[in-house]
Amino acid sequence: MQMPNLLEAKKRTNNSVKTTNYHLDSKYQKLGQNKTYFIKTYGCQMNEHDTENIKAILEQMAFKETDVMENADLILLNTCAIRENAHNKVFGMIGRIKHLKASKPNIIVGMCGCMVQEESVALEIKDKYKWLDIVFGTHNIHELPKVLYESLKNKRLELEVYSIEGDIVENMPVKRDSKYKAWVNIMYGCDKFCTYCIVPYTRGKQRSRAKEDIINEVKELIKDGYKEVTLLGQNVNAYGKDLNAGYDMSDLLKETAETGIARVRFITSHPWDFTDKMIDVIAKYPNIMPYIHLPIQSGSDRILKLMGRRYTKETYIDLFNKIKKNIPNCAITTDIIVGFPGETRKDFEETLDVVNTCKFDSAFTFIFSAREGTPAAKMKDETLLEEKEKRLYELNALINKYAKEANDKYLNKVVPVLLEGISDKNSSMLMGYTDTMKLVNVKAPKDQIGQIVKVKITDVKTWSMDGEIANE
Ligand code: SAH
Ligand code: SF4
Ligand code: F3S
Image 1: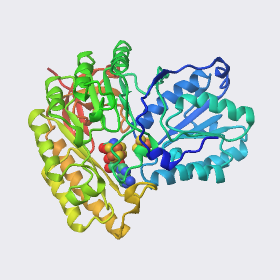
Image 2: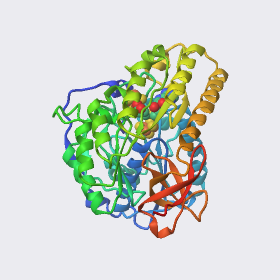
Image 3: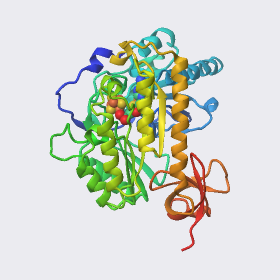
Image 4: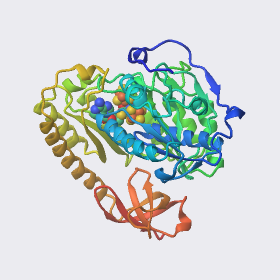
């Protein structure tokens, strides 16, 4: 048993990061014969992509996927720790699964992802959820076969969670959700330590993947018919800083664009490391999409300082304006936290003011959630939840107003859309995203799925648009 430890997770060592290659030992290859698996994924794109790796590892072990949890022989929850409600959802689900296990004792139940990296959660599992079979963390996804094997062999909970990140593991198999767009990790971990955030503890120190491995992955994706890649990291703009090779995110974006893949995206950008060179590269290459997710978190300089974000309202707005000026039609979205400890009405009004200035294309908004072990969790917080909820409501109304205004500009315009599949809302329509990441439901024949087509926008709403294939 390997338990995570908060103090260890906080440490940053100068140990050089090695790259190793994934290999599945032959003794694990039949573990899943005649068995099915079901995975539920919480959290961010990082977790979604990890799930794509986990699925492929399980399938190498002969498991088959099912999308009905009740039918599965192996149920795995890939969890997120970013806010308290993510926790609650997972433990609610675990309760449901416990009932299922009571009637089907042979099912294998597991947890992985960011939540189990938390010391308190691991202790809780050891204490109250001993009936779980496997628990592994974000640093040892490649060890899933071994953890599963040991649990089956010993018929007991196998909990293996490391606090210190290990090697970068290349060549992990992947079962991608989409045939047209793909996530590509460019870095793991985060060293920013924003005072509210748990990620630097659950994902370890920043480790950039070698550029050759990234570019080779993109080239393989092109061969497989992929149209779009999204370069993934917690703050992609810091790519390469840890490698000290004089090769940064702007170089990587350029080289990725030069592979010729139709669309390049990247998330998430921290304003801190966003360089002019990056803006130039994005502006220059038509296959780098004019869409940037640029979390601001707060508009109050006082709160930004307490958050450890290292920019001010003014420098954020300067960057925002520079991007808008240099990258025509660039859509910019953001993340905002309300109710950070000590946030006053005046601080909140500074946030509303930035929203009125930037008129974001859209935003994810959250109420601050104290995460154990982070500095902000110890800060004095006297604002009532009720007041925080009011602020969130007020902020969302403003965000929605500007989201609709941004979309209104698209009415009757012709825009490129990568058609991804059948629309959730209307099964006679297809859905896809514009270059600027607007969701469009399109009247188009099914054989156009997987194509980037020109779409005329016929109707706009706050969160989506409708369109039809443009006649040119
Ligand atoms: N690496 C990304 C953010 C990843 S987490 C970045 O720096 O932009 C996604 C969002 O969750 C954050 O942008 C933040 O708005 C929100 N978030 C993170 N920790 C939070 C907390 N403790 N309470 C509420 N929201 C939080
Ligand atoms: Fe969290 Fe900040 Fe790192 Fe983003 S940059 S993952 S908010 S610590
Ligand atoms: Fe959640 Fe971990 Fe992502 S905490 S937001 S799944 S990095």
